[in-house]
Amino acid sequence: MNRSRARVRPSVRLAAAALLVPLVAACSSNAAPSVAPGSDTAGKNEDRPLHVTVAPTGRQAAAGKPVTVTAAGGRLTAVTVTDAKGRELTGEVSADGRTWVSARKAAPGTAYTVTAATRTPGGTAGTSRSSFATAPADAVNKVDWRPGAGSTVGVAQPVSLVFDRPVRNRAEVERQLKVTTSHPTEGSWGWMRDWSGKDRVDWRPKQYWKPGTKVTVNAELNGTDSGAGGWFVRDYTTGFTVGARQVVEVDLDRHHLTLLRDGQSVRRIPVSGGTPGGEKRSWRGTAVLMSKEGTINMNSETVGLRDAYDKMVDYSMRLTWSGMYAHAAPWNAANFGRANRSSGCIGMSDADAAWFYGQVRPGDPFEITGKDTKGVVAPGNGFGQWNLSWADWQRLSALR
Image 1 (tube, one colour):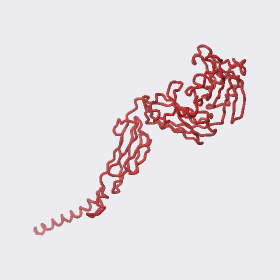
Image 2 (spheres, one colour):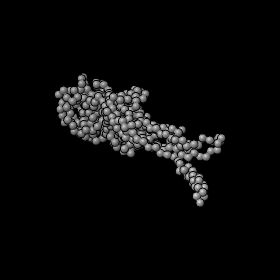
Image 3 (cartoon, rainbow, N blue to C red):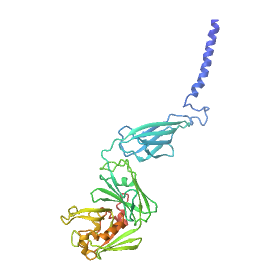
Image 4 (spheres, rainbow, N blue to C red):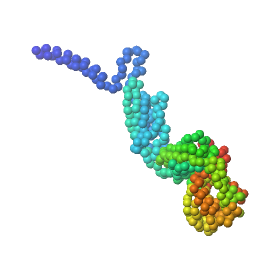
């Protein structure tokens, strides 16, 4: 009886072990397919460990660099990189499936989650997750836009960005600026110093806009280092529509202006420009109507003319940052159509100014001619870029 039991136990153990072997193999996710020894396919379909690397790393990573995901021992099939607000950094997997690089750069002070879908040589799909965060910006650069979103502007209106802090990496910033138009329009960016002393970049078309053109501007600046001035930490976008073709021709020698609409004269108005022979002269060249400011106080001390005037002025239409306006000037009525006796502005009667104010819009060009003037309006003094030839304007791009 005892000898019989002793013979059975080894048999049971061997049988149990034989049953366990296939079960263990079936539960393994890395099991290699059966390959006959000496076969040409031996080793080619083995499922080796797959390793995913993400750069940058850490909790205080440097911003301003693309996110790079690399797979070793397999392929990337998809990668998603999102910040805490769900905004995604898009990118593409390389043809060999080994790398993925984001199209945008990591922004400062932002936490990112990286999810990578993978596949091993043996066909096993997997997912790798990781995260990193970038160090906050030491300084932030902000942007002031013109024109405003949803506005309708004149045919000479440029896109204008004025930066709160200096921009040293101009080429890098300019690459992030995109202008899309509903009508094919050739144009270029140009860098300048704004009248305020700040760095500024404008986009103007080669010629006046075609009326009805819809314009969209995207500045994908988030994560861009402007240089000594700090980082951009957001994107900007705006859109506007170009209105009717209106051109204001101002003849200071003959003392009148003419409003042209679609090439046809709408009305001629007698005016008086800046007094010849000194700092009270008007500018000539093309000035663009910047804004319609209504009734404002004009004080000569703000434009370096000491105590020449201090008046409340109606129907004020700004043409330059340096203080040249078109406006109502009833105190100068004796000189309308006869002589230039203003302090630099283009004055007209109350009735003419009221009508004219209602007709023009920001972006309309004022083409000013006259012998005794200060010179042409500079690009940064309002929107004076139209006084440069197309070739000269293109040279102001950081990408030329």
